[in-house]
Length: 492
Image (cartoon, rainbow, N blue to C red; front, side, top):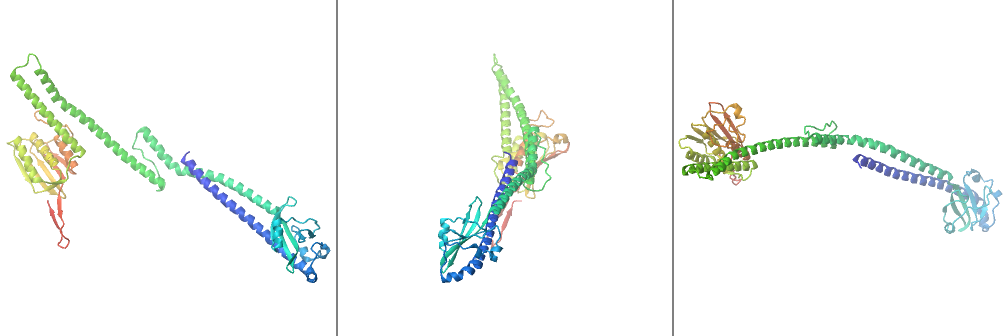
């Protein structure tokens, strides 16, 4: 069952219950009010008869001797009384004895209206008794009133009125209410169906858009909602925002998958050369007759060099993978000046004749010491490989960051190659005399970003290259007792 149908049925059900309660209440009020009106008219007529006729004609006689209840009073005695003339013809009057037999009847009828046993008991206790009877298949509302003389019931007055008109009016009212309620419910169902359709139309558009996106795999589509900023409007905005995030995430995933495919292809290419060399050298050693001892030594040396190359490649890949994952990176203060001095000493062991200019200040960065050291090693190693001149290292504050600059005096890099300088396994216009895998700068970039910093390179052909690394600076705050003030130590 659709939401549209459920909403319409719920709305119709609520309206139907409301109409039932309203109709039943209206019917009950009308029935009771008409019954009360009839009772008031009957009581007025009964009081008028008792006061105008019987007390006027019978009181003197009753004072001398009690009336004879079983003797029928001649109608001629009271026929000319004005009270009887004022009675409406629709009212029926009977005068009964204390036993319930007819004594007098204004219009010549000879039958008394029936009284139940409970009614006779109430009358003998000098209480009026209302009763609905149907002597001739016509319902009547009867008021039985006892008339007492000297504290003894002398006779009973019955004043009745047929309920035919009231019943007919109530039946017409009930039929009208039922017909009007059914018609109202039918009309309300149609209106509710149309309103729910209009209210749910934006949701249908959202559903249709989602289906089209799924079918076409087009995350650029958006829901076109021009209505108010109600619940459906907020749903459309949220849906569009979700699509935008999905589109961005999808683009990033595609980019990452593309980089992963390229990375796997580059790694496979880099691993294939040393493994092929090792495999070929092993075949040479297994050759019969075996090669001379001098050739075997060269083969073993070649295998050792290729094995070392594989180890370096695997280590670089591990460092790069950890940097990408952001794992094992501490957040601790790292003094820059001692670390730069340590890295320069290690680089001088590899190139004793190289000139290194240490221009670092006494600064502290917040990060992982090994990661910062790896960044400096990668930058200096890259500079050593591509230049023959002096290399300078600087460290200076910049806002809440620390700027590390490694500058060389090499041949520089063209603008075309500079765009891909941080691509993995990219070595520019590869000079076969330069070792390496093209992972130094990508490793430095990945580690810098993992530490919350950034890296950039500036270079022009013939002017050397300058690599700038921004890392978060470390600020230590020492808070003294508030009575003595606060002191702050800034490592910048």
